[in-house]
Amino acid sequence: MLLLTLFIAGTLIVFAFIAILNAFTFPRLRSMTNTPTTRNHFSRSLSVLVPARNEAPVIGQTVRTLLAQPEVTELLVLDDHSTDGTAELARQAANGDGRLRVIAGQPLPTGWLGKNWACHQLGQAATSELLLFTDADVMWQPLSIASLLSQMERTSADLLTIWPTQLTHTWAERLVVPLMALVVHAYLPVLAVHHIPWRVFSAAIGQCLLFRRAAYEQIDGHTTVRGNILEDVALARRIKGAGLRLRMADANGLIACRMYQNWAQVCAGYAKNILAGYGNSPFFLVLTTVFHWVIFVFPWLMLLGELENWGIWLPLGALGILVRALTAASTQQRVLDAVFMPLSVGLMTAISVQALLWHFTGGPRWKGRLARNP
Figure: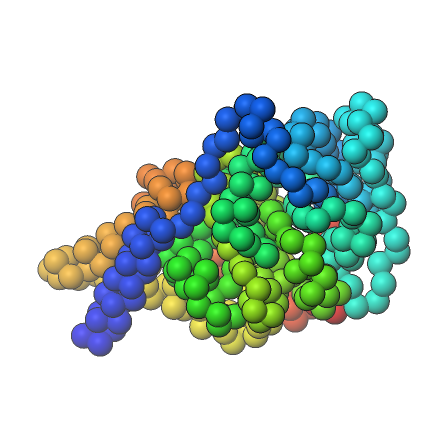
């Protein structure tokens, strides 16, 4: 029991150290001012590339907010065989702005996942020096594109990935979605991502990927990740593997996204991806699930069973909550939700079970298509 206690304590101390380090070193987008100098500062052309499959509820607002930002040279929306009028709603939202092009998606080839194929087509159609891949449900504040381009110029990035501020409303969202920030901000030092060339120190999020076109073409774009459901991370690793510059930053409220709306969407959305994050290995997924129970839940269970040892288990449980709270504060999430960390681990366990069921029964489907590696 002593060794287990030391293991839990040591792990949480490392997580806390990384979270504190990232709190001071993780770059954040800087708000820009709406002045002629700002508007004329950026000389490189920018293509914003949006894959869209049945995005009628959000596509109009996305098109309007992106076209309201003068740094956008062209906005390409790929209508991926939508059945809800996505393409027409995008055209209506543009109100005649010639920068919008709506592209009809081609049939999905064998070996490709839907989003990767859509992004490949967008990359082929784009004409600009900079390529910004983003999702239809990402929300852009005024001048956020200017802030994004400024960050890219400051860092000389070949790939700049921005972590949008995640909006959560239902309890399922609040207890699960912020765990993405926990993993990035407590497990992965951003300084290692930026300054150590090993590909293991890579992370990215497909909601905002800004490439130099030359770098995107150098790594063969989405072609080499055609069947990878974690294509964003795979692209980041290819950038580092090619000796190019990967940079990350927090959106700082300038770019936001609400990924899911309820527990069913949260469960399906995470379950379709989680196994790929462990090399499609059920063993490693189970092992990691046990690890998180030991680190974040076991101290509380022991506290209930050994009240006389509260001086050991209470600090360990509190340290786990502190780590979760630190990452929430750094990413503009609800800090007080950290007290529910043991429940969050339980929900992630349910998601892992769903992922394993799909793995052994033919795979998940997302928006009507297979949503894992063929």
